Image (cartoon, rainbow, N blue to C red; front, side, top):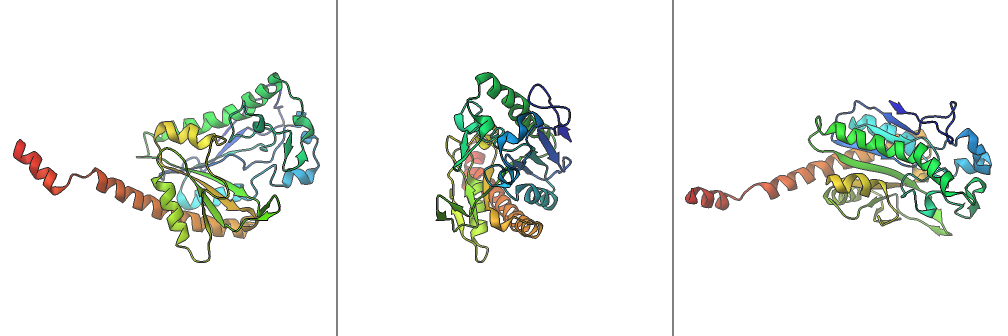
Amino acid sequence: MSGRTAEKVLGPGDPAPFVVFNAAGNSPFLIIGDHAGSAVPHRLQSLGLQRDDLRRHIAIDIGVLGLGQALARLLDAPFVHQAYSRLVIDCNRLPARPDAIPEVSDGTPIPANRHLSDRARHARSAAIHGPYHAAIAAVLDTRRTSVEETILLSLHSFTPKMDGLTRPWGVGVLHGSGRTEFALGLRDALAEQADLIVGDNEPYAMDETDYTVPFHAFPRNLPYAEIEVRQDLVGNPSGQEAWATRLADAARLAAEISSMREGSEQAPTPGHERSQGGMA
């Protein structure tokens, strides 16, 4: 399943702005990949960058496409992911934010993003950002009738070094407002795995820069987790498969524990049941 739009930014030879992998997946999980793609519309001429730049972490969350597909298969979950590079427009940012279309990323100038007019920015948003988020919303709405409750898993990856500092975490679990019980359970389940340093809102914290999880999970009151895996661990197919297994095991455990806790909180105590019976 895919979506296509082509007005000014996208041409007939460009890929659709989103892809839904394993669309028939029927588990509670929905996986999303805001930065899984690296495509650039032909009309933007590679953004003025060298080909190697479009393979770097500034352009794509390295490993997330393969990781998401492997995880989708293991969890029997749909995987909605972006086809275009985050340098064209960052789908995890409010389109009006300056960093949604950065002029410089990690010290690298992005020539085609300089001095854009509001009209040009809106065209990118309408062609790519809008259809991607509409696809996520449509999947969530459709699943209301077939899945008891969706758990939103947002997949990202992070570079092992940033600003000269080595990042020790193998994975980070990000959470903020809304229903955090699943994210905290996932964090704890991953921490039980041997030889794994798990970041709690590290190497990033969920804040006002994040768009996708707050936009889709918070108003629907859905459990969620934003997951950051270090890129050197998922840079090849074997690493992606290994990490998909790690994440699938931890996600199932976290979902089970969250469900049990929710059930125990909702169930009336025996004393409360007797009290109600006595008053009847």
